[in-house]
Image (cartoon, rainbow, N blue to C red; front, side, top):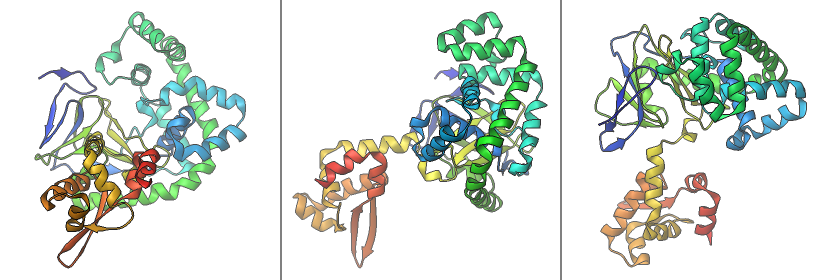
Amino acid sequence: MTTVANGDRPHKTVAANAVTCLVAVTLIVDPAATGAVTVRRSPLAELCACLHSVEEAAHHPFSAGWVARVHASVDPGLLARAATFAPLWSAFRARYMLPLTATGSRTIESELAELAELAALPIDDFTAMTVQALIGKNSTELMTLAAAELMPRLRLISSSRLAIGMRVRGDPVGFRAELVDFLAAFAADAFAEEWAQVRSIIDRAAADRDRDIRRRGPQTLTDLPTHLPGDDPTRFVFDKLYAATAEVDGQRPCVLVPTAHGRPHFVIKHFPGYPVVVQYSANVATAPSVESIRRTLAALLDPTRLQVCYAILRTPVATAELATQLRMTRPQVSRHLRSLREAGLVHTHRNGAAVYYQLDIEAIERIGPELLSVLYR
């Protein structure tokens, strides 16, 4: 069993019940710690999500309207500055673009307070967080990477990352001042109005999560996207494309940050010495786990199940009737229906002794409109 270096410590291949995940992020939560899991609103984190959607608009159809308004109304010079800093909020966001502390419920009026925390971040930590974002890895080895090793790696990734790497290595204080100045300008010119629009969504999500934390404590983590079931109530495993393990307690809490524009991404940050931060969509149903996608695809690979989907597309059908239509036994039909149900592709309702099944059209649409068009033929 191999280990992989990460931001906190090595992490072994994870097995959670019957689900095996080659790489995952595991949070080990002290059940006795007060305030080990908390929730907060963060305009800076939402600004980061918005900037990411501007840079990678094709991946964020739900933010397309806002992105179009930004391109139509924001000064081209400000957009050009955004492009130069874009590697800091691309696929691997810089840790300082998410809350650096666990306390506080930010409003847009106190946006500058979050920027002040960024401006006051120890410069070595700022540099290390920037290097992690540029390389796109959590490894602690990157924190002490010499310029002679860093620059060749960045040159192989992109010229824009190389340019930032040279600036942050040459004058980290000056580079950070320029970054904070840009974030303040962009927030005032392009983000304040949008924050007023999405804040109610984030407020509701945060309030719901806060109530759940008071009711269930750390077990609220099991409701987050990509969570894998397990038997240990202190270990919370999330299906991600890298391996890491982080310990959570009262001194180093896990901060949950709902986002409107971060959809469909699910972000976990665990830089040593700072709270673990989880940014999740305010509509958590939009961020399925990798395992749920595997189940869905596996369920639809079987041609007989596609016939079942077609049979229950327009109207609910009972198992016995499906068996007659498809010339199968009831147990055979039941097995196929169970696979479709476990993949989240059917609705059920009972009428007396009979259970009726109908295809979940929205679930099929989320997979792709082409599949739905095939079934509607």
